[in-house]
Image (cartoon, rainbow, N blue to C red; front, side):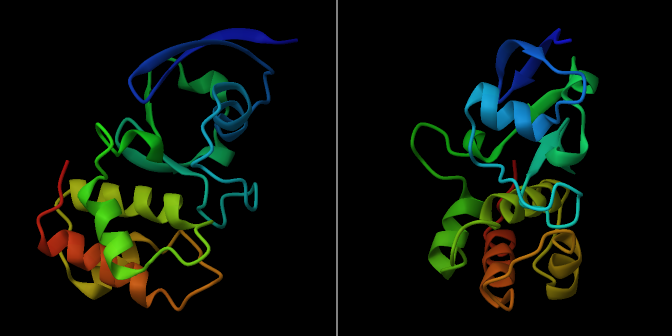
Length: 157
């Protein structure tokens, strides 16, 4: 039986009827229409569904939507403002770190938390920050380069 909830997503309030077992990922994609977070493994192992909840990167496939009332949810769609990409997104484009694009949103959201918390351009730290996100297309070099570039440019929230 569906339950009514209110979610704050990207600064907008959404009143929704959701199944008790509906994941945040399912609600974001199927009810709110946000396609940035991708469905991958459905078990928290790939990271392509990464979003922020109260500023922390989380796997949206692992969270029940019902548990998120009163929390602030941010997806990749909220990073660009007035048609201008976030500096981290720009760094990904500049470095050619997008390949097929499936993991890109999750990588950016994981990296965004790292940078927002004062992360540096240290390669080891950058690799650690995105360790929960898998890319099947690359050797991660361009992704790491993009995050390091954004860090050196002072990309912060």
